[in-house]
Amino acid sequence: MSQSTEPATRTRADRPARRHRRTKAILAIAAGTALLLGGGGTYAFWSTQTALTAGTVSSGNLALSLGTGSWSLKGVLGQATSVSNLTNVKIVPGDVLTLTQPVTVTLVGDTLAADLAVTQGASFVTGPAAPYVKVAVNITGLGAQTGTNTYRVTPATAGTLTATVTVTFDSTTPNLVGVNTPVDLNQLAFSLTQASS
Image 1 (cartoon, helix red, strand yellow):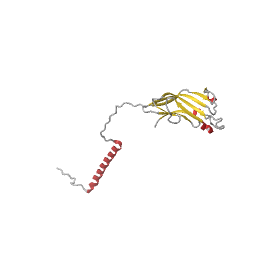
Image 2 (tube, rainbow, N blue to C red):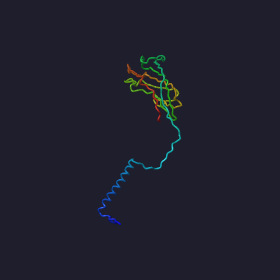
Image 3 (tube, rainbow, N blue to C red):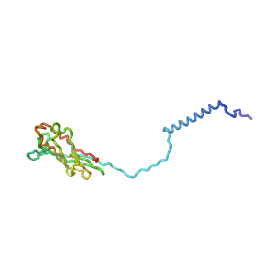
């Protein structure tokens, strides 16, 4: 019967080999952990979810459209007369040019309110005549103005409205201020903006 020749105890020369194997094993475990944390695997934790059964909410609507308007001109003498071609009109101090304009306002929203206004661009009238040509608006059925040429509209008061816009050449315009000055009516615009206050 053969006897084992392996020594009962390891020598000091064997210790570095054991350390080397242990180090490799630790490095392999660390690399595996890094892969798991880096997206190579996932940890599972309990989770659950339940969807609402509340239904669907829809957004509202805000829209503005203009119908066909009509113009008239009234001077300090005589009655107002209709204007078919604005390019032929030559206004003088004391004249009032009036637009009767159908305006359709669409407002859909439980809490929606909007400001309907007539605005004028920077080049509506230029030069010394600018302070003497004034714009005003009246919109039937909307009560008092909430700002300059501005009315508050709600879904209850929306629909097809009638706006009366006047362009007045002030009768107190002095000397010859404003002669040969263009008034660009295309610089007038209706705007509809959701109210925030």
